[in-house]
Length: 329
Ligand code: NDP
Image (cartoon, rainbow, N blue to C red):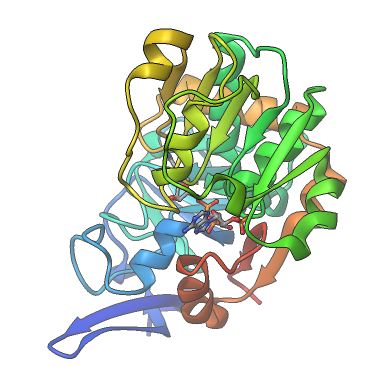
């Protein structure tokens, strides 16, 4: 009988979707050049959608979610990887269109992998995960366009993207203002390096005046919606907003005035289709810049069995920092 391993499998029938930990065999896995013994995966906003009804992201059921993972190559028919190599995967619609990381074994295309950067363990790489990788891309986009005078605003700060963005910006010497709807997370955010806490309610109202005081020297925005529209009118002349997410809504009830009269840049950040060179560059900068003690402070440990609840929690904005799933626990 073939060896079995555990995975979180989402199934769909007329009553809807259900997620449970099941035994699979290697023959169940999708096609790909590299089979990986997964060690860690994480819980991101998209995972919350895919553990539930899919939100249009899941193409076929049964499905194994998990948009990122880190582990050790077991077999490879591609020259770039050999058994024993440590690897990381984010993006490429893995965990959505292709089975993902909520499993003890995964099979993927070699093109989607990145070698684990020097200085990071597989657990640390997943403490960073897709959310942290995306934060690095956002910070690099702000660097490329230049930080302006004034604090750098991070919205959705206690979430995964926000937490890593606060820690990265502070490690780069920037003054960071963290927007949160959870006042009880103030100590956590100050510990990551935020010097100012902005209550979510201060930015929650819809835009009444297209321009307000020039306040922020840059912004990493994980929230979108009304908050992003407000923030655009508060940017310093020529400052940039790296738009990462839509935890607060997909609409953008803004005017063109901040772009026309203040030369504000709105930079879209996509982590899914990043070319190999960009992924390697971002991972090596993460390993170089991100303080590992702060990273450890963001980690919420979890097992495969915890995932159905955590998937629902992240959609309600109730998860703090980075949930790291030990798939072998
Ligand atoms: P989290 O749920 O961990 O964090 C989102 C945070 O946003 C919450 O913790 C909360 O922070 C805040 N928030 C939630 N709901 C609202 C609301 N209604 N209004 C205002 N603020 C709200 O998610 P992630 O950090 O993992 O992801 C954030 C976003 O980024 C998601 O939309 C995700 O899909 C997107 N994303 C995009 C990527 C890309 O490639 N562009 C890659 C990864 C993520 P607080 O409690 O501090 O207010």
